[in-house]
Image (cartoon, rainbow, N blue to C red; front, top):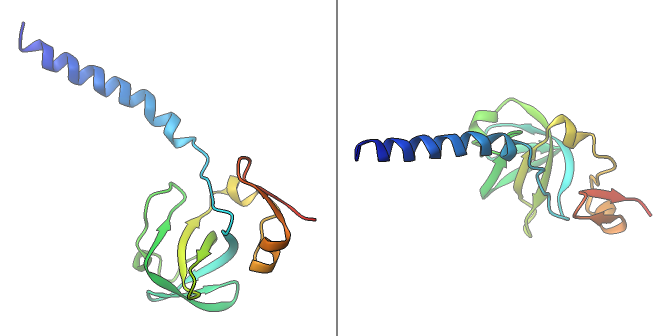
Amino acid sequence: MQRCAPLAAILAAATALAFCLPAAAQVQRQFPRNALRGEMHFGNPPEVVVNGHAARLAPGSRIRGENNMVVLSGALAGNAAIVDYTVDASGLVKDVWILTPAEMARQPWPKTVAEAQAWTFDFGSQTWSKP
């Protein structure tokens, strides 16, 4: 009977994990206040075009797909997506989140730093309000 104890523990852990995975998939992503929205065209890394303007990805930048997993910039070359993104102090694109349809539906969302400074952001509901 001693051999059954590890098998029972593994089975219990696998069952618990199976119940946790659907809940984790439904977690709403939290975007920072300084995240801007735009259409991003991915060129050869680190080149991108954001809202029609040439830009570059910062060294160590992170791109997260719709499933919130990290995507390599080279895998996105030649593609375009609606994203939320942040810019570092030197003007390079730092963090990128490729949006899901539900996230794209959250309107309005600022596209420029001036809009972000003028509007009010509610972090809890992830919504912006125009003055």
